[in-house]
Amino acid sequence: MASSKQIESILKKNKRNNTTALIPFFTAGYPQLNSFASNLVNISKVGDIVEIGVPFSDPMADGMTIQRSSHQALINGVNLKWIFDQIETVSHQLQAPLVMMSYLNPLLAFGFKALSQRAKEVGIGGFIVPDLPLEESDELRIALENEGLGLIQLITPATPASRMIDLCAASKGFIYAVTMTGITGSDKGLSLKLAKYLNQISNLTELPICAGFGVRSAKDVEIIGQHAVGAIVGSALVEAMEREEDFIGFLKRLR
Image (cartoon, rainbow, N blue to C red; front, side, top):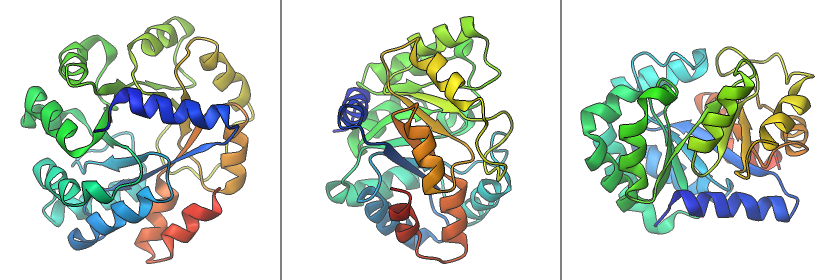
């Protein structure tokens, strides 16, 4: 069974071994429903942790690529129950722990207690909820922690230092450091101020730091790995899937 402690342990092992953890993100049920389970298994063979996106009608933190994938997945009929059921069918084949990225509404509709219990059953170790403010997160965080799961907090370059401290204290598993202001999928490259920013967060917590947004190449992963434990790749992976390319090969080339 996955847990926030297991996720933290895996990332700290990467840090001890001086290797950068790779965390692929892709949208559940995209491009097709019948490929999700097999894609998940194959991606888990490459990623140290796999982040599964729950499609939502208004993904405000996401760029056009993930918006398209989310829209198509909803048309395909994806919902949270379906995602859990699909994960369960292949849970014994998965080689990496899972985290789930979802906006708040689908989680509210499912019910926090039922969500936490079902997530634990299928091997979800933590949740990332971009539209849930820290001040309103107690109910979900407590429900997750009752099952050994974690609410992973996001920090951005615009986050004040005092708030960074609060977010680090509340997070479980790892800290998600957004590499830039704006939305996912940027092709502008990583900020020259990235090192200072990631080092600032690292100085505030013993939790592993994983950075995402704008990660598109092995060079990006290498740069992030100098200042953080893990690199999260989302839009570039979804685009490779969208183009029907060898997306597993793409992930392997990021190492």
